Length: 619
Image (cartoon, rainbow, N blue to C red):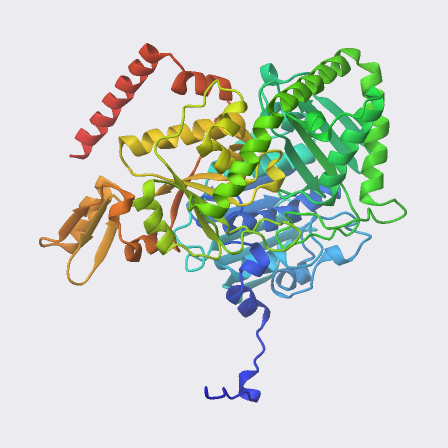
């Protein structure tokens, strides 16, 4: 019989606000990460500070926000009203303290719980807040939430507003790095949602005149739009819609009170339902919902009184009520879409005719694929039960509501040896493994039919659960894990082609990554260093001095599970797969995966020369 653990008054302790945030950071900012993912904690820190500046703009105070990120230091400066000078310390260091509790001042604010800047303060090794108003200023400096310096009121000629500077704590956010692509996307969303607002980021200007119409314009090339973007505006609601000529699945960008709800919620569900209902009634046909929404690219933004989100990071709306005297979220959106979209389609026959042709085309394709789909689903179900292509994780969903766990990850590997190493090393709670058999097909220019007919593609689609919509994606992170050789690089390209061809929104929404694994192990009797490049290898040899043992890893299967656990654990290195907005997906695939051998060969030779020149310079 086990010995009973003592439970006395000594076991009871109270944590102050900063201790609790530092002990349980995930409760406040979601996952930590190193900056390779758009939802990593360092971006949430920036967002929490920026939200306050946005709220000032919404309240009519300050049309410009300046942001600087140099190395690990972040500075956000707005020209709003400034924090009341006597409360500068309190609003960043006392829980449940803030102006947003006064609904008269912030009726439809992004955040209402008074936690944001406190979390940033507690999770930063350096945090400074400065406020200027009425010709006077006050400031305070902190370290990990502890006040280190406070300046009392001073006369100043500076413009009014608030300036926050912080450096994230690298003991919490390990090996972190801000990626300008993710910051830029966040800032673009802010200006789309706040036409007239100017954001300057490291000197670059972000501005929007047309709101969500600009968002869609930047996300889908004009040549790929089935019809010009439909842009509908109302009180507390804005919608933009078009359909893609080439994309297969649905794509949604949804927002509540300026917050990007990446996992949707009640408003997005209501919008999807309203579009189907309105279009059915307009054409007088009971079209399948999937045929109507196939290839849709859209955005919706609503404003709600005191919104309720399903997590602190506000990625999914849980509210069912608009607030005040307004109807439910579902009724409000349904009524708006029914009126505005129906009117638009009646007035724009060219658009309505193009849309109906698209729906009928989707219907034909669905019927043509119905038999293949049925067989493919049965095959996928049987495969998941009787073979080991997918080693699932225990918790890829946080609860019965199908919220993706931000930590949930699917590794796509090549061969049994590599998948075996990862399987033995992984965190079985959040990390799953899908094993490829040989090289996948080059799917460029193929129809969706190949996804169901090809066993590898069919099972991968089933594992990810993305046949109809990204909303049902089972894993937040999809990681391609291949050997760092020519064959491994080729498999990476083929998989990226698969996603670009059939599920580009997986990449657009930042879910696809490349796993970086070490090329070398350099060690002596006292220390082991894993190196991801030739330069790191040379640095390690110099650091360890003497004649350390050097091992060159040729493939993932050669790395033992005991070592592999480091590379997919806290020290994981991921490179996000990102799209260049200046190039269309069709142009990218045509050049890299199409039959243009001479021009591609010239491109490879020219870039190989550049790489060789760099290596020679290093030597």
